[in-house]
Length: 249
Figure (cartoon, rainbow, N blue to C red):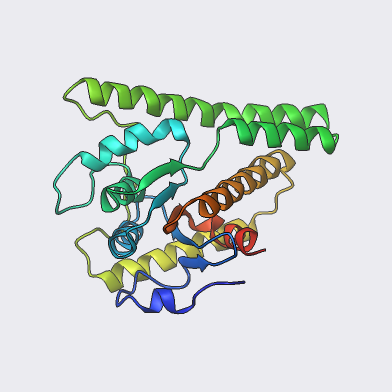
């Protein structure tokens, strides 16, 4: 894999490590991937510190395009010397890179739907599996539309409309960086161990998630080939390795 092992080491911050950072280089350009745990203080701090240093041309977020206006509103809300109250690492990333072009790379979008339907037809999946795949898209679509409506209300009124409450962890933004980093690593290890212990043959879920990652990788490939400056992507840590491998192949 083509990446810079020295990038994370250039920061004197225990929250910025190779486990959560990948700089992928290639003929099409470079892309810096930042893995995050949603709403975790260490993840919020990581994107803030890195983006303040890198100052990217393009900021790619694991969000559907329809949700971007709401997270932009979150980024403007609250005190400037503290992380945004809502939106976690995504709104923190937008605030930390005010001059960057912000792009949503997650489903639902037309590219995702086209690739998903094409794959289902090519693989000749059963009607039951196809129905389960399509049904699983309903929640994501409703969430994206809810974000769009919430953004409209936030812009039109003096209220900050939220779609969900922030996740609370056993550490917060006031804790020392080393404590935040240790808690985040422990949390990730625990989740990964739990997932590894659960056997699943849910082909519908696999079709959806694999297609999501493929579309995100395609979009990042397009962005780094058409952007003159740096491209930084903020994605869930579970997608980090797959996206890095896709972009370096």
